[in-house]
Structures are given as structure tokens and as C-alpha cells.
Length: 95
Length: 477
Image 1 (cartoon, chains in turn brown, cyan):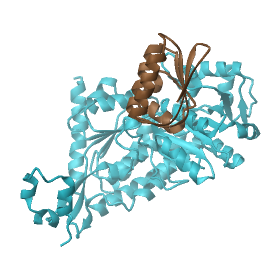
Image 2 (cartoon, chains in turn brown, purple):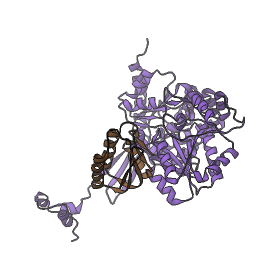
Image 3 (cartoon, rainbow over the protein chains, first blue to last red):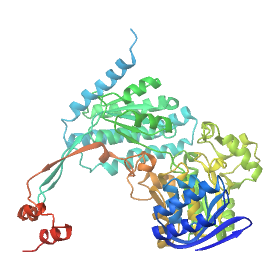
Image 4 (spheres, rainbow over the protein chains, first blue to last red):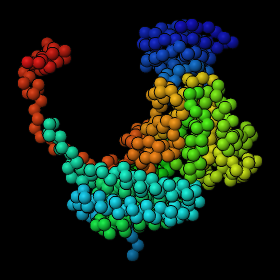
């Protein structure tokens, strides 16, 4: 996982299998870094699996960032399907 | 004296219940004779009924409606004629299971304006094949042609020995009367094909319903596809009855690498690509943003007429109007289902992006219905199919005719395409006669010897876990 700030936006480049442990680590890292209402992007190109905990992290980050300020980019089709089925693609951008 | 809504429903359903009781006495051979007679009568009136449907609804082309009537009669009959639907339909002596088919009972058939006579013929055939009486409830915009189709089927059925009132049809029913019929305790099943509101009413009635959800069919043309062939097939489907089948293509999705070749081929075969300004004009005449649905007056109309309505200077011989879009959803009205020769066109940078776009379209009003794919790479076909939520993933096939089945594949020919739970349906199948029987099972005693020989006291021993029990249970003496 790589996290950097780009023009005020927090960009998290994620890869691999996001199970509970990985998702909790991401959540803890973001809690420490995230400023109120800061925009966040998850670069998802390398993500092959997401667990329920990862979905929860997305909801938390989305709420913290505010409407329209949280984006998932480069989502692979199998992961896109997870966000569609769960209805979470309605909550934030999932490209 | 004026008939109340309840009396109206009691009379109609009461007659159907009586017809069902008599019908249940008939055997397979007698039932099959009735079905054959109805098929032949409907087939012999295919042109007359198609012309009537076209004149009354003003939608589509009568020549294509003839083909729809042929599918609904000839192909449906071929598909169901050898199906066992009466009495004992299977015997498994080894396992002691005998299956008996019983009719479900009176069926209310809701008929859409887009495919009126073909849907009547289809629903009457599959209902009678399963010895069920049927009440035809047509769209108000297609009641004359539906009544004529139902009358032709009924007279043929009666002449072949079917019980009186096995086919009834409604003429001028109010919303209240339709709802009273739907929720009548004597009614067994609703076959609901029509607008979202009507299908929802059917589901809300408390009567078991096989309904049809809306479609929004994306078509992915893979880099491995034969582009001229793919485009010709899409034309064949989208122009069929001017796009009135809910499985007709709604959006073309391609990777950037082949986008220009696809675009040129579409133009060569008669499509007109709209400018961004023309896209806005077309959306205004084709889509009702307040209702969030296509406008009824463009359904089943030729592209040239729609272009004229929108003030677009398309060639007079234009086949399909194409709008290049960059998104899916409310901001992009032409990304929704529109049953007319209009297609959205998406160019995506990679295969993954193209599949994601198809997922977006699939989930935007078309969950569980149909998706279409042109590819000559089997791995791609499987990968794509696993990611879609669709009862039918038609490959290298015009999707209208492909989803309906019987012409280009071996799907059961049907005018009721199940959309699974995503589309609020109980099945993803092409609904047909086998869905209209209750199967009873005689279960003769065949002891599970492993269970009867097992020492049941071991289940009471808390030290025995699943692995330990399974080891003993499956021991090979």
C-alpha cells in the first residue's frame, strides 16, 4: 500500500488481496493521516479481492471525505461487480 | 344492474376455475391434440394478426410481427410438443421417485403493447399445454388484436375438445378490475409481461407471479470479433420490429483500438452518429426525464421518423441513430432502455474498462435480463459472462431473436424472459410450459442405509464432532 498527498487529495495505491487484516491496517493508517473533509482516491488497479471490512473502510472514508470527495479508480471488473451488487457504487464514484 | 368489481372478478375467475377442473381430467394425448389445433390456427392467422397488431398499435413492422407470431406458434409448439405435462411424467425406479404433473390452475396473462398477438399466442399455447385455463388481459392499446388472437386460439381449442372458458379475454378493464382479478383467491398464477407498474401490481397482488423485468442490453464487441458480421447482426436485431423486443441491444461498447473500425462499419451499414448537440435533441424526444422512462410515442418507430421529430438532419434511409456517450445514469438519458432504433456508443481504453461499462449498463435498469457479446475468444466469453448479471448472455447472435430463443440457439422460445431475483423474478429461464405445472412426487421407501445402520446414540455424544461422525457414517464395511 502506498499513500501520498497530491494537490491536497490523499491518494492510496492499493494492491493484492484485501482481507480483514489488510483492511484494518488501511483503516488505521488512514485514520492517522486523514484530515477532515479531505478528498481521497483509492487507486485499485492491483486489487484482486475485497472483504466486507474493506467495504466498511470505504463507507467510513466516504463519510469523512464528504459527498463527491471519495473515488475508487482503476477498479477491475470483478471488484466493480462487488460494489454494484452491494449498492455501494451509488455512494461514491467507482471507475 | 351494474356489476361490481368483485362480481366482475368472481365471474371471470369462477368460469376459469370451472374450466380448470374439467381440463384436469384430460390426459396427455387429448391435451396435445388441443395444443396442436391451437398452434395451427394461430399459425394460419399469423399475417392477419400481425397486420392487426401493427394497425392498432402503430408500432414496429407488420412483416416482423409475422415472424414474432411464427416464433410464438410454430417454434413454441415444436419446443413443447413432446413435453410431458399431464399425469405421470417420470419414473425413477432406482430412487423410488415418480413425478406427476398437475395443472397450476387459472392463469392471468398480462399482454404488452409491444408484442401483443405473439404474446397471446405464446401464453395460450403454454398454458393449455399444462392444462391451465387462461384469462388474457391485454394492454389497452392492443385490445382488439389481442381479443382476435385469443378468439382464434379459443375456437380452435374448443373444436379440439378443450373445456368451455379455457381461454377468456378482457376488453375494457379498469385498473380496479385488473387488480381485483390479480388478487382473486381463485387465480393460481399471473404471467406478467408489460410495463414496470403493471408487473409490480402483479407481484403486489399476493398471487404467485412470473413477471418480466425491464432490460438494458449492453453489447460488447471484443477485439477478437468479426466486426462487419457483428454490426450486421446488431442491425438485424435492432431493426427487427424497430427494436420493440426488450432484449434488443441498447448500447455498443468497444475498446479504443477497434472503435474507429466499428464506427466506420456501423456507418457503412446505415447508422448515423449524432453530434453532441443532436444527442441532446434526441434525448429530449426519446426520454421522459420526469418519468425516468422512454417516451411511448417513439417506441417501435423507424429511425428516420424519430430523427425528424428531433429536428436532426439524418439521411432519409438511416437505420439506427447512434449517440456516443461517456457515462451511464440519469445524466445520460440515452444510456437507459429505449425500444426504438437508437443505440448508445461507448469507447473504452481497455478490456477491463469496457467490461466495467457493460456492468454499469447491466445494472442501470437491466439487471438479470440479457447481455450480448461478439467475440471469437472463448476465455473472453467466459470471463465476460461470469461478471454479468443476466439470464441470457447471447454470443455472436442478434440479441432480440437470440434471447427469445429457438432461431439462433437452443434456448426455449419464449415471450416471457425471466430476469432472476435481480429483476424481481423467481427464474432466469425463458418461461415456458414446464413452468406452469405443479410437480407432485411419489416418494417410495428407499432407506438411506448409512443412516439406518448408524448408531444414533453417537449423535448424543458431545465429544463426537462432525469429522468423527462423518468418518463413522461413511465407513465402508
